[in-house]
Image (cartoon, rainbow, N blue to C red):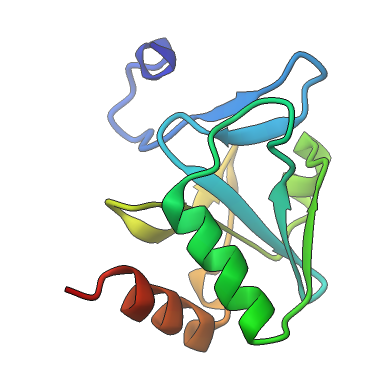
Length: 124
C-alpha cells in the first residue's frame, strides 16, 4: 500500500516513519546509515519488520567488531549521514544514491563488509 503513494518512475523505494516521525524502514527493505564511522539502523522493537538480511548485516558487523548502533533515527540523521543503504533478502545491499535531492557516495559503505554480507547471505 505504501508504494502506491508515489507515481514517479525515478523513485525506487519509499521510507516508512512511525507516529513520532522516526524513520523505521523502507516499504520493502530495512535501512542502515553510516555516520562518523558508526553503522546505525532503526530500533524495530515497537514497529517495523526485522528482515533476515538485516539480522545478517548486524551479525556480520558485530563479528567484524565494527561499531553499530540500533536506535532512534530521525530525518535529520538521514540528511547528515555519510552513506545510506537498504537491504532485504532479494536485493541484498542496495546503496542509496540520492534522497530528497541529496546525493550519497555508495563507496562510503565499507566494501569488505558488503562483500562478506553478500557472500554469507547468498550462498547456495
